[in-house]
View 1: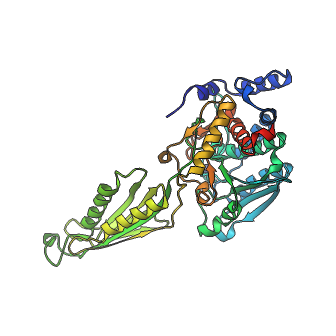
View 2: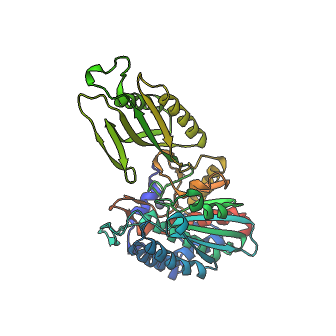
View 3: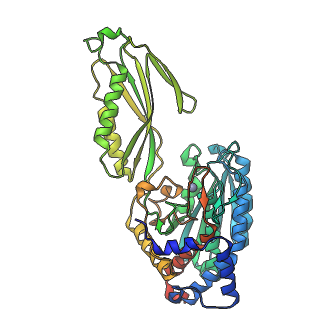
Length: 453
Ligand SMILES: [Zn+2]
């Protein structure tokens, strides 16, 4: 579902024009655009603070995008952290760099600011890395003729990191920053989580402890009229089957059996037959090798196999992934798959192993409540309604690690864009600040709007 009008209205006004208009409106002290009439004075100050900071924010975004920070480019990830740390310090945060050597990645940037009258602990989540490593040809920001920006990380998620800074600035302008204990976690390995995960996500979990709210600034489904309150988790699996080597003329006979390849085929067909119709659940077979011998190589994304048409195959290996919306759905799917694997055709054997799971952001009433507040803030700003992204359309993200700890979580409120994880990654600089305004007004109201007015 794509609620049309407000988002499109924003799309029409692109590029520098919108900033010129915003500046003119401010300079002339004219009333703010439609919808703003429903805003309280503190909320209007927040909006003005964001508008006033936009040109600096765009400049920062351009610098961030032009600094490579592919997850494995540890120097690049650290360089992005060094660009963001002073921005956070200037907003009164104490920042810390956590070296990531023990989990095989660059590290994380953490920042903390406990307000003098802190009543609500708030976790803001971003990441420093992108999927574009140093050997990628996609390295620089490019301005497209329609005003949009194309570049590595422009919306996934350097644009979101910049939105996060705008939110803090707006809360300060609205004089409500002191009411929050703000904890910021900018992971350096969101796109390829370091191992072991327990170490790589220890800082995120520690920051989340005791938080009332968590907000992730990922780009979500790329539609500014949507936000994310549920994400599926993902888990890799590896299936191996075995058969008895024999002349093909004896296959299916007693003592020979069906061979490893038929056993793998039976299992995969049963996976499809049993799991394909369950909502939110997917089970993909990504790589199959089979024959007289079959083996995976390197990182498991390739391998080799050899076999002859007239020999019953001895060995098959299959890799795939499983996606589910809740831990309970994962458990049920794993049990079903294990049961299917254990049946065996005559003369064969099979076993399945599951890798460490990337957890889901399971749906919850607190997450829905936060979306309702976000939607109300958006309407009050004249920016139209915001609906939940279908979890089947949202990839995995770091907020999922804290979904079970923090009662209210909302994600996908970064800079909306398209083409993420490809050289077509594009974001619209004209809507930078839009989600920051929504989040800021939501947080001002969360703290008991009447007081803030
Ligand atoms: Zn991301």
